[in-house]
View (cartoon, protein in one colour):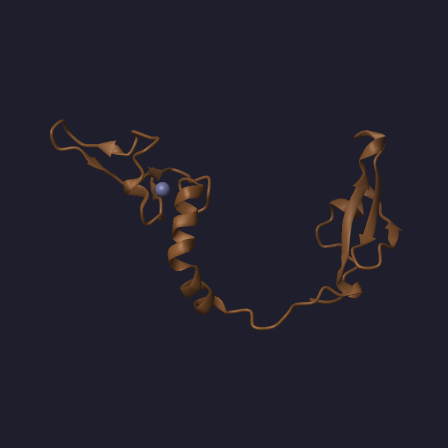
Length: 124
Ligand SMILES: [Zn+2]
C-alpha cells in the first residue's frame, strides 16, 4: 500500500507530544516525517502541520492560483440555500429554500432537497 507523506514542512520536528515519528535502529534513530495510508487533513497529518504549511506557503499559493483583488458580492439571485425544519423529527421534516439576502422561504420536496443539481440560484 502506498503511503502518503505529510507535507508539513516541520512535521519531523514535532516531538513534543508524539513518539511515533521516532524511527530507526537503536543508536541510529531519527525523527521522521509522518506517513499514513490516508491523511485526515488532506495533505497533512494534523492541523499543526496544516497551519505550518499555510504560514510558509499561503502567499505563494494565493499568488499562484489567483489573488482576490476586489470584493465579492452575494446577490439575491445567488443566495438560495436548502434547509429543513429540525423540530419535526427525522420522519417528518419540512424542507425549504431560504434566501440568505431576502430571508424569503419557498417550499421544497425531499427529493429536490437531496438533488444536488437542483437549485434556484441563477448567478455564479
Ligand atoms: Zn505532519
